[in-house]
Length: 391
Image 1: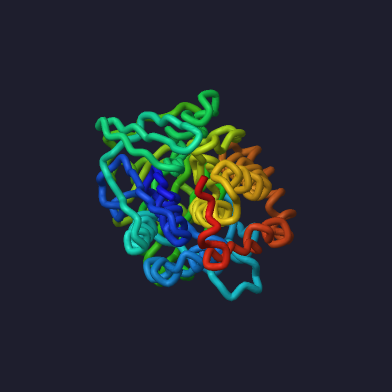
Image 2 (image 1 turned 90 degrees about the vertical axis):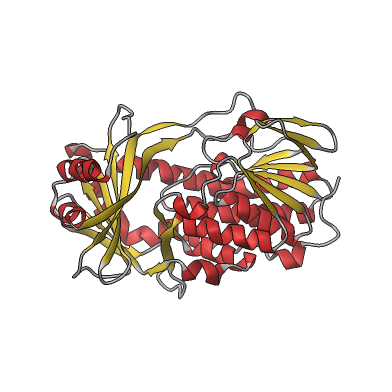
């Protein structure tokens, strides 16, 4: 089956890799020509995402460009410890979550997809698509037109494909938070720990990836969407120091060596329609969950979509099966993401409420979050083959 995937970030190459493994002929179209290694900041992969990568055959390559993170700790603005729990895993799990640069994950997935036989075309922006009973025609800004039996929208929170499937679908909006990420060199902090402080003006997160290096992110509350263009590293550091005078942020930001990324945090109302007859959404195009789980959900989507296409008699039936299998898990995580974002908004009363909630809830953290990490991805070798949907 010929398949077009729109978007070359995390979800797109992962989907291409999974679909190549079940016999599809896949071309990924990415609007930007920037090398993937140069895009984005650091982020986390939970153990469920790592297990999905193992099914795709590239876990070791991803682990090689990341750093294992054992614990996560939550603090008040004054530096008082609220709780210490396993990072994105169950406590008894031998596998550890990892932190890594986003661009490195994209690069590994693209290489794996290319090695599997997929094509990746950059500099082509989708502007339209037309479906028939047996095919879909993709139209690009350059005038290029491509025909396939399936089109997958893996084009992120600002998805074009989402609007083609449903013109009334919600669009992304500013979430009232913006962020800046940097790297610091500071000794004396415990490596392998992710730390979050609920500060006066938002949330400050740093991860000690080794004995002298910290990756940090300041998530800043602002009800008015600020203009982030043209801000250099020195200006960012002054702004973060002014907005986060608390002890923990001040020490880490004071040792900063570079700013790696900045941007607005965006949200999108739940997307009710994930697919039509020949087009389907995946990753942030379908469900921008955030809160450290977005990349893992993208990789899970790749395997679940491939499994559905392998097990259903027709493409429309496969897309319906994929939708039904994913929604319960995603809906539960979307609620968690909303609550986590709300906890990061500034305000003295909110900080006190958050601290009280965290003291009560953190002892039950594993019980509440365990469903995320118990996920068992499908094995494509067991479901792939000649029975894949072709009609």
